[in-house]
Image (cartoon, rainbow, N blue to C red):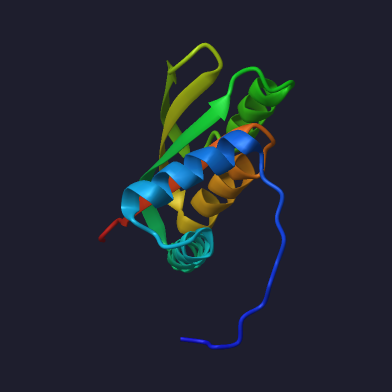
Length: 138
């Protein structure tokens, strides 16, 4: 473990911080700092795992987003049309009045699948995107 610590300051919406604090309390973390370190480690691990998605893959992208975010539905539709050759099907569910869950089945080159997931992930109003894939054995 690295003993060199750096202090940072971050700004978070109150509802996000409240939810994070609830999880920290439930899981028994001793401090926010430890929870943030754990979250960053998880993010780095996920990023490395995503970097290894290569070759022909079959998979699913799960996405949660804010239905009321101005322009988001059109942007999501445009991105999906851009990747129509790797998207095989999608399922849309209205979770609450303003939150939606979308599941997208994909098949194609791992780099394309990652690009699609990252494009969706980068949109304002998208809460989470997760890409899960398996290799296609020849």
